[in-house]
Image 1 (cartoon, rainbow, N blue to C red):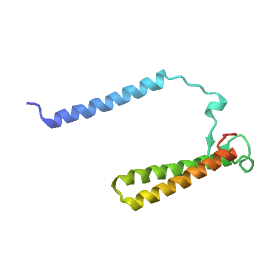
Image 2 (cartoon, one colour):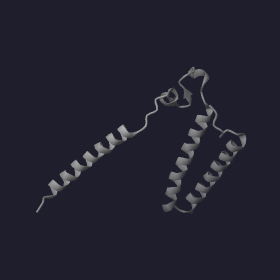
Image 3 (cartoon, one colour):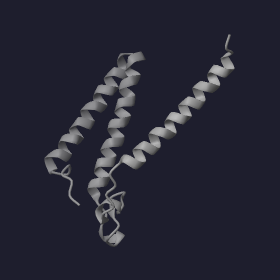
Image 4 (cartoon, rainbow, N blue to C red):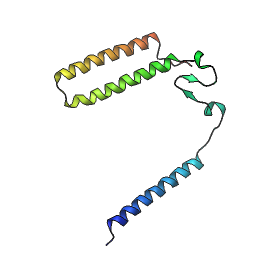
Length: 115
């Protein structure tokens, strides 16, 4: 009878071996485009080709803020599964405020991404 330690060792070894095989297959078979646009960085709304003081993108900040708000709202929505009626009312009140802010940003044209 084969011991469980040997079976576990074989499973771990096989898993690590397959991870390396797939990694090298993807690395060598992938198409690499090393043009200037592809390798240049775009971090936090700043283009790396111009001065930072002149290129701050407020649109990046607005999109990031919306992501954080909707992410927190999803966490609150998951908490509703075990909550009471007052928590449900507070959640829907927050949901109305978030949708109102989203509509305001949409109506002012702030959700159009321009670099």
